[in-house]
Image (cartoon, rainbow, N blue to C red; front, side):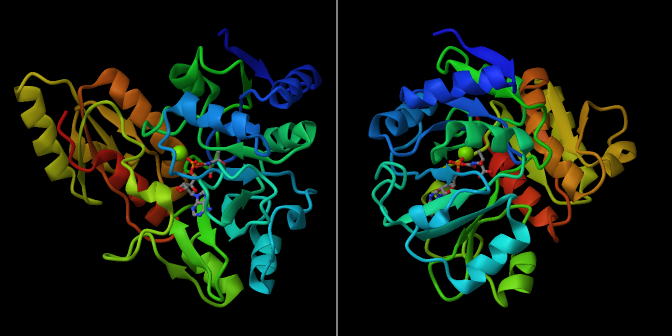
Length: 332
Ligand code: TXA
Ligand code: MG
């Protein structure tokens, strides 16, 4: 199949709408990462998403809608605190999991009675969802378990030949996937960390639990149990500030004949000396925006990648969560 990469125009949106209406797949930009969209109401279209990504069939999908979309069509009830959260953070990188009304294909939620819904803030994503005029099921537009895509080129490299159309909306600014929040209970619960933090949620909803990090906690978000975001390289991760540990690892790899690279905040540069470094810039938000491109660049230029973490506070917590998933000790 030929894959077209087109800027977002009236023509490409009309093409996208036609592809979706025919049960096909369209990759589109969002403020977090690129999504791989299909008609959420169609069993066949949703099955095509799983097939294109090689995604395990028990990892449910998020439904994407435009800001005007009437949520009541999709979900049974919106608790008052969830409505407050929507007013505070939507459109934006917060996905909320509600009791489903069963209006979309059961394959979207893998048979669960809940439904994850997201309203992206990216102008191109909104134009796409308005043109689609339907609820769009979309996971990140990468091959299953690989690093999520933050550019049209990343999508093309993973899914070229498997999807007919990639809408190019430039680099994703947020850079890591949305916060996934269960809002089916009296107290909201973070299932996947993101740039909307538990503290931000608690400040609006009064309280917030975090169920994805607590040791021994039951895994509520099915996707969290798979190894995700993994670059195709040997990997290791050192704590924030541990440039010495990263340098030792780098030098050992190089001595063994491997090409090594260090993924680190800009502040580590002098301690790293002249070694190959991919910079995450300064601050948690810049690190979030750059992390996935850095991992993809890393797997291109090196056989072995060691990361230096950032402080896991505020937005840094979600960045560290992704760095741990991508870089925690892996032999290949
Ligand atoms: O930022 C994002 O959320 C991106 C963009 C494209 O919107 N999408 C994304 O989708 O990251 P995906 O499929 O890669 O991750 C969806 C996450 C998974 O961890 C999945 O388990 C969880 O959301 N999820 C989906 N439906 C759920 C449900 N009904 N209950 C609990 N978790 C759910
Ligand atoms: Mg994903």
